[in-house]
Length: 89
Image 1 (cartoon, rainbow, N blue to C red):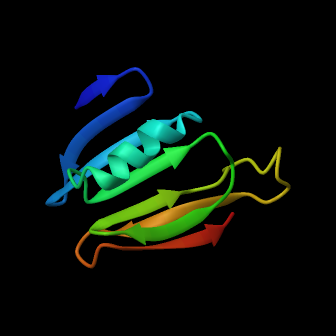
Image 2 (cartoon, one colour):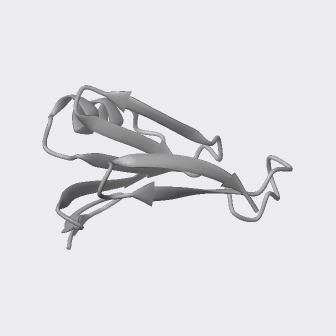
């Protein structure tokens, strides 16, 4: 795993992953548009999101505790199908 500040990159299940924590919109866009990751998992906003940008599946699992938003969520990823779904905890 390669960790640089708020960003990490690694491979698992045949997919290239990017992890990003923080509110740097430029970095977020760069990771999405760069085409180097199959899955980009982000955090910091506590807002659940699953979407696609080109070949990249973008996931923000929300927040597991539900303390700030009032809703506890997590994301489940199927690496074979490259599909994710949000669940309430």
